[in-house]
Length: 262
Image (tube, rainbow, N blue to C red; front, side, top):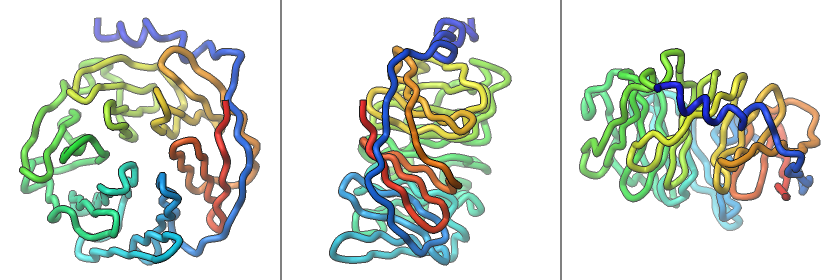
C-alpha cells in the first residue's frame, strides 16, 4: 500500500502531453555577486556578495548580514514580506521583512526544536515554516510561538528508498524532492501523492503544480499531465529561479530573463 500513490501516477512521469509550454527571451543584465538569489513578484533583485544578502529595488538597495551564523546556505524569497535565511552550519534560520529588517529572533533549531540537523527550510502560510529534520519527517513550525504545529510520518513510510535533496512549497502545498521522485503534502501535513520522477535535480512551485528539471530539460507537472517546456538557452546555469511566469538563469556573470508562455 505504501507504493500505491507512486504506481497510480506512474503515467505522469512517462507520458507527456503533446502540448508544451514555451519560453520567450526578454533581456539579460549583468550583476556582480557571489550568488544570485532571485527576483520577487515586485521585480526586486536579490543576491549575495561576501555573505551579505542584498535586495535591490528601483529606488534603493537594502542589505542584511549576520556573520555570527556563518555562511548563508539558502534564501527563500517566495514571500517577499517573510524572507527566510537558512544557516545550515549553525542549524539556524532567521526571517526578514521586505526591508531586510529582522522579523524574528534567530531560530536555533537545536535548542528550540531539539533537532540536531535541519536540512531544509521553506515557507508556509501565516507565521509558519516547514522544516525537514534528521528524523526524516516534515515539521510545521510556528516561529513566533516557538511551537511545532504538526509533523508527518517518516518519509520512508511511503518509500524506504526516498532520500530528500530539496524542499519547496506554495502557500497550500509542500513538495519534497529526491533523486527517485517527489512527494506532495498539503498544508496540514497530509500526504497527497507521489511522482516517480528519476534524475530530477531541481523543482519549483508553479501555478497549480510544479516545474522540474531532469537531465537539463524542464517540464511542468500541473497535477493532471506533464508538459515539456521549450527552453532555448545554451550555456552554464549556476542558478535557476522561477517566479510567477518568469524564468531566470544566472551564468555566474549575467542573469537571463525569460517569459513562460502556454
